[in-house]
Image (cartoon, rainbow, N blue to C red; front, side):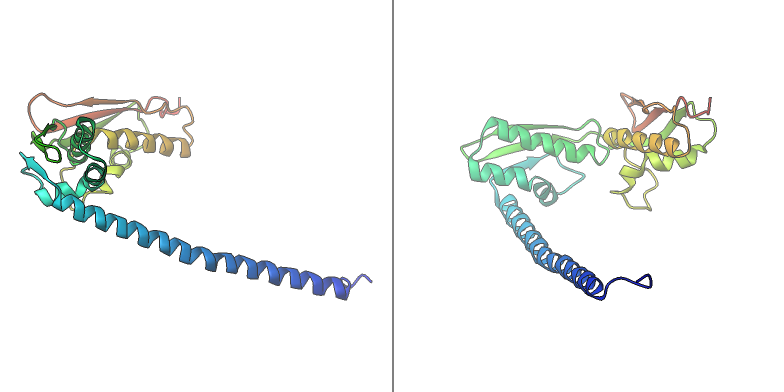
Length: 224
């Protein structure tokens, strides 16, 4: 019988395919409510943390760029942990550290945050914001073939994800530039420049002023 398979074999195969398809869709139907439940739990947890953070016995001084409500919100996980587990120097220091990170993500490269414990449950965070530093330029050392404007967009991609597209002067965020350098390297490799180096970054932050510069090593991207 060369014209086709055995009738019973065809029926069995069809049944198996139907069973497999039903199983896959059944798993998806089970997973979807589970995922929705996790998302609901995460939202409820974040909402509770937000409430705790806004009501916590915490004083914030020195903030000018951001209001206290926003800063408390940014620290809701750290504040909630303190409220639930007790105030210690290490935990207050963690809150100060994460507040500094938040400022640095917005270009406040010289920010400093200190803490003071004022009681069993009360502490204060004092912020020295410093100026907001902007990224003036990025130099791509060793680049010969790709327009610098194109590489620039790769390099500042991580920063643009947070900033409005209408933002003309981008904030200077060293961690973003390090990540952007990796994106530049991947672009070079995708273009066939396999010898391109790891994209070492040299940052220049002036002691005074609000403009910073960066240089990304693109040696090997000249095709030589």
